[in-house]
Length: 345
Image (cartoon, rainbow, N blue to C red; front, side):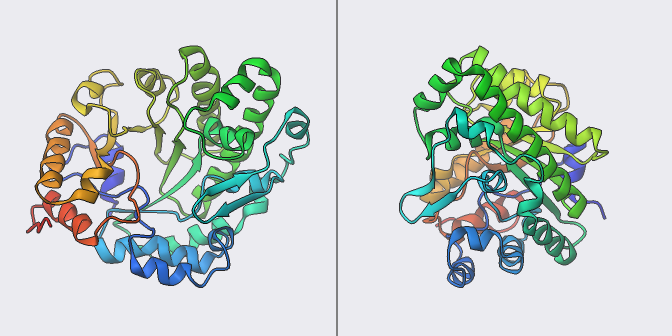
C-alpha cells in the first residue's frame, strides 16, 4: 500500500488529508525525554542511529501520524564541512562565526559522508515503519544554514548575514555553493537509505529583498533539486520558505519542488491561487493554537481544513510543536481530522 501522503504529493486530493507535525518527535513526549536522557549531548543524540530511530518512530506509535520525519538537525551539515557546532541548553545552537577565509577552508569533498550515521538512522526507521507510512528526510536550506554559520546563532533580524551577502557577494556565493553540494549529497544519501519524501527547511526566508531572495534562496534551492534529480532520485520534495511572503510565489514556481509548506501567516486559499496548478500545499495550523487547546484549537483546525479544501493538502503546523504542547491537544487534532471523537481540553 502506497503511503497516503505520497498519493497526495502526487496530486491526489483526499477528503481526509494526511497528517504529520513538524517537530512531532520532541520534548512534549515523555518517551522522547527518556531516550534523550541517555545521550551525553544533542549532537551525540543525532548521531546515535538507535536512539534517533527510536524517537523518530515515537509519534507514529503514539498518534498514528501518516509520516515520520527523520530525527536530526539542520546544523549537521556544517559539522560535515568541518565546522564546530554546539547546542547549549537554554541558548540553542552556537557556532564559531565563519569569515571569508573560513569559507575557503571548508571541507566540501566528503562532507555528507562525515555525517553518515544519519543514513543508518534512516535505514533503521524504514525497516520498522509500516508500508503505509512515509519517512521524510530533510536538510536545512542553504541560506538558513549560512545564516547560522555567519552569525554564529539564530538571529531574528539577520542584519549581519545580509550585510555580509551585500558586501561579500563572491564569498557568499562560495558558501552557498558548498552548502548546495553537501546538502544535495546529504539528501540523495537519505533517499538511497530509504526516505520516501525529502524536505528543505528554509526557516530564515523572511525579510529578504526580491533580489536577495533570488540569489540566496531560489537559486540554491534550484541547484539542490537539480542535483537530486540528476542523481536519479524521483521522490517528492517539499520546500518550506518560512515567512517568505510574496517571495514564496516565485519559490513555488521556480525551484521545481513538488509541494510547498506554508507558514502560519499564509492564507491557504489565496496562496493556492498563486502557485502552480495542482501543487500540494502543506500546513498551516498556528502552533500557539495547539498550545492553547479547547475551542481555540478546534476553530483553528476547522479554518485550516476549510481554506485548504480546494486542492491536495497535507495537514501540518505553520511551524513546529513546542515543548509545552499537551499530548491531548495533538491527539484531539488527529482525531478531529479523521472524523473520530476529538476531546479538546
